[in-house]
Amino acid sequence: MSILVVGSVAFDTLTTPSGSRTKVLGGAATHFSLAASFFTDVRVVGVVGKDFLPEHEAVMTSKGIDTSGIEHADGLSFHWTGSYEGTMGEAKTLGTDLNVFGSFDPKIPASYKDTDYLFLANIDPVLQLRVRQAMPDVKMVAGDTMNYWIADHRANLDKVLAVEDILIINDGEARLLTGEHNLVTAAKKVMAMGPKSLVIKHGEYGATAFFSDRSFEDGGVSLVPFRAPALPIESVVDPTGAGDSFAGGFYGYIASQPKLTPRVFRTALFYGGVMGSFAVERFGTERLENTTREEIDERFGLFRQISHLDLDAA
Amino acid sequence: MSILVVGSVAFDTLTTPSGSRTKVLGGAATHFSLAASFFTDVRVVGVVGKDFLPEHEAVMTSKGIDTSGIEHADGLSFHWTGSYEGTMGEAKTLGTDLNVFGSFDPKIPASYKDTDYLFLANIDPVLQLRVRQAMPDVKMVAGDTMNYWIADHRANLDKVLAVEDILIINDGEARLLTGEHNLVTAAKKVMAMGPKSLVIKHGEYGATAFFSDRSFEDGGVSLVPFRAPALPIESVVDPTGAGDSFAGGFYGYIASQPKLTPRVFRTALFYGGVMGSFAVERFGTERLENTTREEIDERFGLFRQISHLDLDAA
Image 1 (cartoon, rainbow over the protein chains, first blue to last red):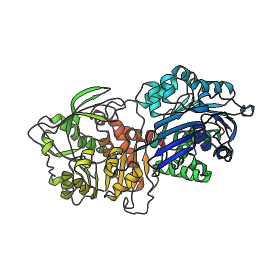
Image 2 (cartoon, rainbow over the protein chains, first blue to last red):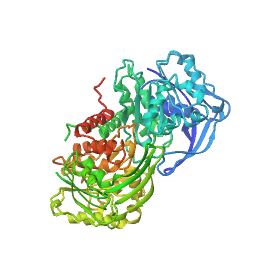
Image 3 (cartoon, rainbow over the protein chains, first blue to last red):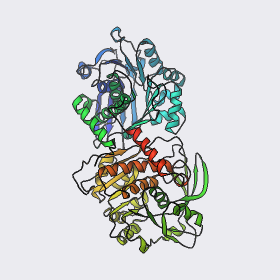
Image 4 (cartoon, rainbow over the protein chains, first blue to last red):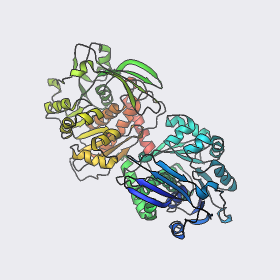
């Protein structure tokens, strides 16, 4: 079934130990939708400026992504400038030019109204909630957020958390959101805020899913967390968009399945890791543009191989 | 088969967010041998002072650990004082009183000479090498080290690395040893220094094993790394000794098996994680003293459950 993602479509100017790039296609909604497009139909709501050319839109449309919800506004597109050093664990932001994204007011095309799966990428929680309310019939809502909204827009964020099925954040965000260092304690507190399930991303170390008794329709499943590994990757060129690509692979797989079962959730975490691992191998969206479902499934097999303990093996 | 571990037997004075303890039993060889004792026979070489009482030795001997190689010297035992804050990712050392450990000169009892598996815990590489040379007939040698030896005693350490089958270190040590941020690149460089296989510990995120074409007797195995998860644990009381307990569980399981196969190596990583997860649940050696093989195997099952992607499941 289809996914609607609402978030940034942007340009990134990047410096990493592998080199520099100026104004490559980026943004959370871009990485998410490219990653998800290998699994299901994707629709995007965002805003871009006059520097967003047909060739940029074609990156998405060539993957079958519906870009009719991308508004073209006067001015320039959101432009982020950042650099990574050392282990590339954290980006250093050198510039944030919001441009047309600064007054983003998500407009949902009538043709998007029948979307089943909604993904609220990292934007102002006021807008996340507005989109959620404009899509009352969606089957599932997943979302992301970041430190800025957690620290300074908490009341608004709380309203969004209350209506999300799955929240996807990283270690630091989970700790900031709850004031708890311990991730298990933090996970329980987050789910008490609303999300039925929680995915905490650990960067190069994979991700852990935490479940509540509301996670699955049938209930009654084991609430033991599930931890998916990340593939140790030698050629990390640019980590930008890895988390959004993870979310796209994860949620794209879920939307491609008839029902959210524990197996589907676990498999989705593996596909999330796979798409994140592709994303970092080239600057911007280059690697996601140039992969195939066959290559994705091959790497999925590798992810299983590096983490599967077969007690009957040699 | 039996393991000989050479390393520190000490007392730790600790402050963690869970409380404080003064002079509890600790030391790398202590944690290692307690963890390994659930899998195989363990023999210890170390040195203690007059403050190491029969009740302390009984903690080991009650688990069947052979302590006849622990030398009782004049003076006090090695005493480490440290504290942990926040995520408890790193200890802050407040005091290091080497005491009798400062002039540690490992003496291997004649009754230990037939030991098959040697573990060189984190001590001066000059001593590690001396012990290795005194045990020419061992079947396998594994070892640990730390930043201090990597940074300031590199020439000596290199001689030890050259004779080790398995090196067990953490992310930071792998990076310091090689000057490489990327763990895959770092792993290759480490194995080029000597170790046939490398285990890199990621703290609360588990561990990754890297293999070379010398890792297994039969050769020809896949060189894909293997990543074992750590159980997300809510009650982390004291991380001291977690890495040594990991090593003890890992190497203890290997020594209990007839041959080092890929399956044995992978299973050993899971048992390492299990023993590390027990170690942190109480101060000092308290939790390792009070577990059972049954409880260990129960948690081993949980570790598999949280990381096993069963594509045939519901």
